[in-house]
Image (cartoon, rainbow, N blue to C red; front, side, top):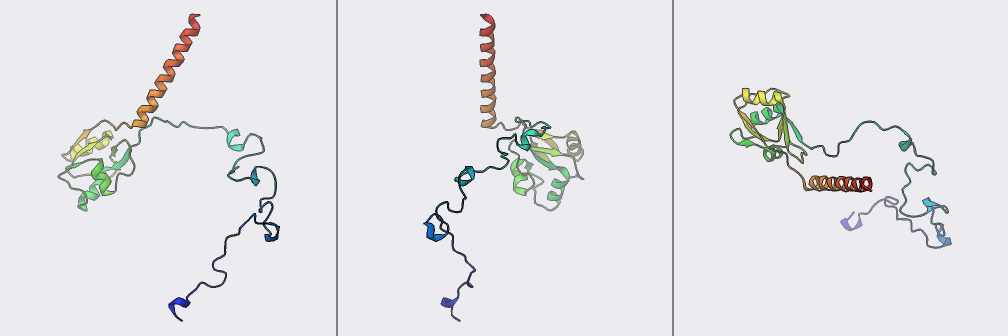
Length: 183
């Protein structure tokens, strides 16, 4: 056997079916789509469509609340930070902020910054610069001899734009209401 003689087994690579190429091909005319209706046309996804009847996902009651203005913080536990300091992954002398925690692989996500929680044992004397911390985390860091500097969360441009649009809509609504009641 030579390198130029190596090939796949017969049937290992099946060719693509070319549809709509005449009645002799066996996949002509309707090209395997049956006939008529939305499913015969391209670009149609009808998941959950029930022929005009109210779909199940719309009939069921909705529960809970999704706050569109909620801030996204990367949650970091003090126990995890202690492990990184013990493993010499984090520099104990430097100020520990979002960038340092992200580089160490602890702070995942967190568009608006980092929040410290007091889970786990903590004994290292560290200085933190974070966006939030629980009461227990603040006490644990101060007990160990460190300090926590709290900074305001990052405000994203999308959040500002959304807030401005909402304020403009409310103002326009109030103005229209005042005009209507003034007549």
